[in-house]
Image (cartoon, rainbow, N blue to C red; front, side, top):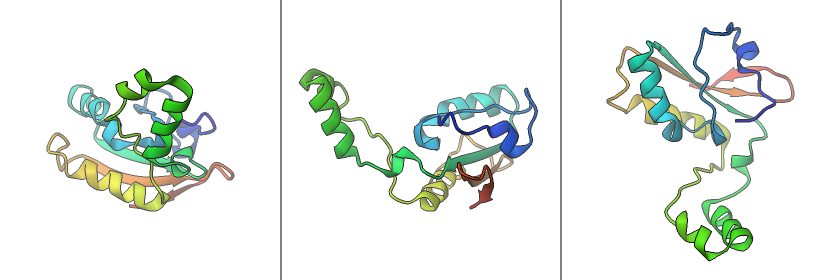
Length: 131
């Protein structure tokens, strides 16, 4: 989701060569619907999960997010999202490993689909392979 990241340049892919699915925190759980569509209907053969340094998802907990909604938007809004998991994470590399493990465990993603996890450094533009 972070606008500082040029995923095509970071991974050397040309326009039209990859489906880029963006969401807060690079969450595989949130992206699963789009991933299934990409690989089952559109022929994707590889999943590259990317999280980045300086991610806002490292800075809060679910309770923090729910409290903020309650404070800023009121009880009705807080009630609407009471069961929502904002999917924050306390440690970047572990979050990459967890999301890759989640994807690899899904029966809707065949074992023939390569899944890897990376960290993009927003200060240098470099990517680092985690899993």
